[in-house]
Image (cartoon, rainbow, N blue to C red; front, side):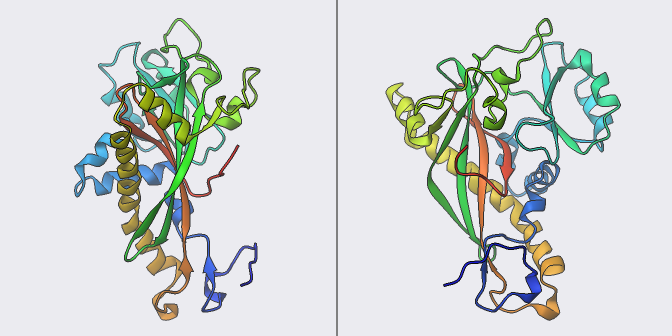
Length: 281
């Protein structure tokens, strides 16, 4: 078979062509749109609310954010994440006494309540990069890709406090950011590890690794299912208009990356979804 790396016109593909992008997935993976999809699907699957920290869309929910956090204390912190941000660029942390930070920000973004009490490896905060393959939208077929990555911070974790400036190397697990740290460790059990290393560690600590693994997989499946209705609308109205539609055409698939944090009690929390994930860093 022939492979071509190119931008494509969805309407000019040959009938047997297979494309490694599902139309609309790049859009749905933006932080604001992912949040909208999850909120919409929560009526059918209330468990989705447990999968991510309390989150607000900016600038649309700026006033709601101020109102919802009115009774918070200076010990409550939030993360500002640009809607289209990648590589940890633009992420900022602030607390109630720094609410004025959001007053002048008009960029599309989400603000998340900072999730305290993370699971630590060697005293450092971590997150997981989990991969799935979406092979069909309707009927939906999802395959979990065996393995994954564990991304570690390069500085020991410390609870954020008002008295101390926050250290990105202690709170942000993004490898593109941490590779600039003098403590970046490229060893097999360093800053970037295999998912199997985490499972082995959890097992040595006496945890039920099958339950932890299944909870992670269930999160990824539920989140993808939450996006399917919007992806179908995109496909049927934007990508392939009715007059050009053919059975199973265009044939597309999508590899999706999930960044997932574990709390100290091993509850998975979705940090973000990535429509063009790298498989190493």
